[in-house]
Image (cartoon, rainbow, N blue to C red; front, side):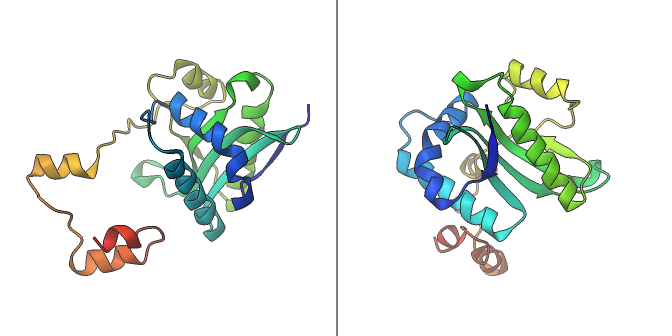
Length: 187
């Protein structure tokens, strides 16, 4: 089986949508009942971000069918990394296509991009409940680094007893220039 890994383009969105849905459900990050239109919008934004550089949304194709997806970006890694790295936010292989070299092909593409950028480190996000995925990455030499925790801004505002978003002044103007944040900044 030949595996072709390439960047997802806008005209691929409809084809990769079912695999995108499967990836987000597998990671435990999708709430049931979320409209597909929202997912399509998120995929379009990722393609647009990739076109601006520093981010890639890639798919593995076999027999003209998407069989794997990954989203990756350049990261400074913070003070705990020696040099900038490439961050794998999500790497997913279709459930019925596992153990066929598709994940390896995606990972090799990520490493090639890291080499092109002059980076010698790759960071990955792995859902804490995905033991098989954690083992797969461990076999490639990935080790524990940091524990990432996520909270909604609304939850933090409630806890801090702040009633509205802090989108005033220079912060709001700076965020308005960031792609995709104009809608948020105008609230």
